[in-house]
Image (cartoon, rainbow, N blue to C red; front, side, top):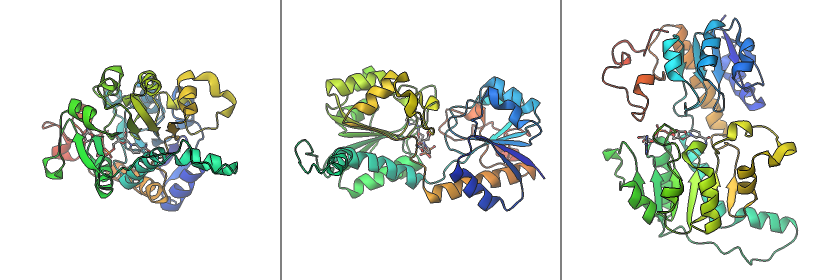
Amino acid sequence: MKTIAFFDAKPYDRESFDRFNNGRYEIRYFESRLKAAALPLAKGCDAACAFVNAEIDRTVVEGLVANGVKVLAMRCAGYNNVDFKAAYENGLTVVRVPAYSPYAVAEHAVALLMALTRHIHKAAARTRDFNFSLVGLTGFDLHGKTAGVIGTGKIGRIFCDICKGFGMKVIAYDAFPNPASGLDYVPLEQLLAEADVISLHCPLLPDTHHLINAETLAKVKPGVTLINTSRGGLVDSEALLAALREGMVGAAGLDVYEEESEWFYEDRSDVTLQNKTLSLLVSLPNVIVTSHQAFLTKEALANIAQTTLSNLDDYFAGRPLENEICYRCMGTGGALKANCPRRINGRCHRG
Ligand code: NAI
């Protein structure tokens, strides 16, 4: 029986993976994140399974391979935390779950937007204290406003559809626009200038790192609401904090944070003040921070477990790997490059 070293295991992961595994793999669940210090846990395992905040640099890749791991199954869509060049050079195959529930993430983005727009978080805190005053809770209609969506893949397009349902005008920016989407694509500068709401749905890549920075924030419509459910590194948090203070950004809903790996998914209430920027952001009344939970629905957890296990089935059976990530194709928005061997033999490399 093949063995999986399963890192960063939470109770909800165990439940869904045990349910769909049906005894075909021995799954060793570890609470630790996959990082250099945790490498001994993978010794003798055939596969490793990791999540968004793992730190899979060259040292970890080489350590996994030295421990006998042949395939790394990322149980997430984003892969900015994996050194793919090192994986390719060391013969470590990497697979992922490209979509577990785009609805879950798009709906969470909308939940953040609605809560901020109508001050739901403040109202709930007030009524808990029997304070039923409405002063300071004036919101605005989304109907008739402009949503600017950056990244129009699976999640971004669902977010666009929901916004259209609200009667919003939707404009979009994408490095690889999809003409079949029927979306109104505009240059980034125009989106920044016209949108009342900006929602980020593009991957974190070298060219999208700090896409929202002091320079781009200076070009937004004053009072814009910024929603980020994609990756923290897309936003320069210091610049966002300054823009919130100056009123250029009216509100921010953040499910991700650029230094979240230190904090998210754990109870860190004993050390709140160690990250000054995050402490300031969470303390602002016009900011809502959630802990990278946009994916967390029953449907998404079931899809994550089923797809991860089926990726591993395909790997060990020598079948084509639909969900393999090819480092040479990174930066092409997920499309395979013309010369990628996967076009011919179904795999980026034999692993
Ligand atoms: P996708 O691959 O379907 O769509 C990404 C879109 O971004 C594509 O249309 C692509 O062309 C576009 N893009 C690529 N480079 C760009 C650039 N430089 N500028 C503008 N657009 C660019 O991905 P999907 O499934 O829609 O996911 C989007 C992101 O959501 C993921 O990369 C991931 O980081 C994040 N995510 C967050 C989750 C959470 O729980 N908060 C869960 C799942 C995904």
